[in-house]
Amino acid sequence: MDIGRLPNPTTDFPAWYGEVVKQAGMAEHSLARGTMVAKPHGYGIWEFVQRALDDRFKLTGHENVYFPLYFPEKLLAKEAEHVEGFAPELAVITHGGGAKLEEPLVVRPTSEAIIWSTYANWIQSYRDLPLLYNQWGNVVRWELRTRLFLRTSEFLWQEGHTAHASADEAHEEALRMLEVYREVAEDVLAIPVLPGRKSDAEKFAGAVTTFTIEGLMRDGKALQCGTSHFLGQNFARAYDVTFLNQSGELELVWGTSWGASWRLVGGIVMTHGDERGLRLPPRVAPVQVVIVPIYRTEDQRIEVLAVAGKLRDALVDDGIRVRVDDRDQYRPGYKFSEWELKGVPIRIEVGPKDVAADQVVTVDRLTGEKRQRSTAQAATSMPAALDEVQAGLHRSALAFREANTHTASSYADLRDGITDQAGLWVGPWCGDPGCEERVTADTKATIRVLPLVPEGPGAPCLVCGGAGTELATWARAY
RNA sequence: CGGGGCGUAGCGCAGCUUGGUUAGCGCGCCUGCUUUGGGAGCAGGAGGCCGGCGGUUCGAAUCCGCCCGCCCCGACCA
Image (cartoon, rainbow, N blue to C red; front, side, top):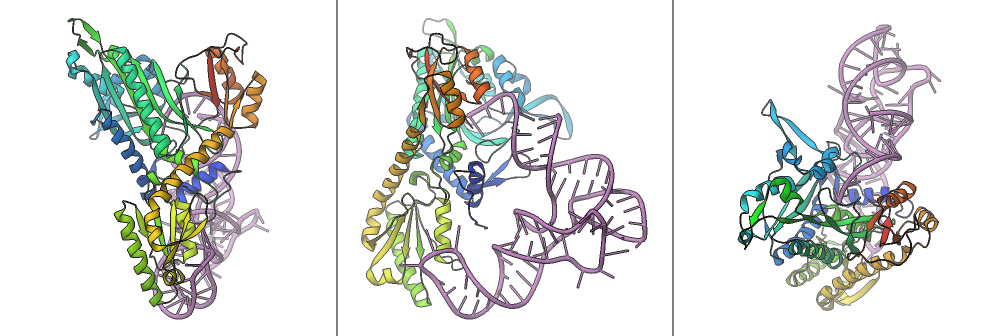
């Protein structure tokens, strides 16, 4: 693999991002426009994200199911807002088995249509509710401009689809899953996020309310890291999903849906990366500790690898994902750089001098500081050292977000501020879509998040001066 | 879809203006020796339908036409 120097993340963030993803062996573009190949290092990180999410889905009472990749196009059209929202990015199958299809099929851009039309058959009574299902899969949205992990025409994600007997219960479910996303982002990915609501302009096509968690990337742009929707009875109405309540009355079912994608992998890169490459939170690092042996002679090689092997075994017993890099064709300095590029949280160096002194050198990816420890202590101190890296990454990301969150006190403030200083800008908004549009037209920034509980900020709208009803957070976004 | 740029070895590029016999450079790759505590050195070697099709010409990577693909910038999105 060709590992060269990286572009400067401060002056050329998009180029830096692309090079990190490629050089770290995470992903690359594939032949059809907008598609990507996920490579072992990138897919490996995604597997830990998946596991963290899936474990929590199970703990909150959900089961996994799988619905098909394509379904009749006319199904999509039953929910007006929904079809309108997705029409521009649909992939449509017109031919199959060498013949033109009588009914075109769509490749799912999301699965509400096929799932709700199926739920109609599964739900008759309040006793069938709630239905708490999730599926892991891929979806296709015909994107024009793509970026590895962040926006590709096909991407991997999970989508939860639940059905409930009451509005309150569905609403609670949507918030519960938002909290799951928040917890995974913060505790597992070490990405500080703002939970909240989307404005009507930004919400999911077909939802009553869309909830979101938003992260702030190192270049000052926001990234939506997960969304959860309260669907009201919109899809139940469109797909005729009714149930008999305890009083024997026919009612429409209440629904939610929620999704998070491998975009989160891109979020990890853009939140924690630095000029040397990726910095991985230990909880999603495919390799948490790498041991690099250093030797000159064959005798030293044997001796050093023996110590490295014993250390590896001790760490494996502690449940740590560890690898000994015993490749003979690369020298130590090369390996240091490569593992730093790949973001491995902790490196242990073992050389002849260390073996003689019964010690090793440890270096963490957070501070780059080299420390000597006894071999025994190195083994026992690793779980705590990994926790320190995990916490340190979150701490520094949070400090970055705080330093880049600004309060706008006038419209000029907001408009010029977002242009001059990327980041999150907070200010009162009256709720009028016209005012929202004006800001977007002037600055390319959008409302990323509104408070979970609407609460008057007690100050006039920054745009029109009318009564402010919301404290909106604005930013340019991915 | 509108504007700009580019297709030559796995990757990054030169050569094209002014056509000429064997198409070159860096990185990577293979072999050997020396090396190995922050991206090793030397020597030898493999690897090309010059994006495709057609035209001009004794002769095309080079000139002309058409086509295909990719990248960047403007309206949508996890």
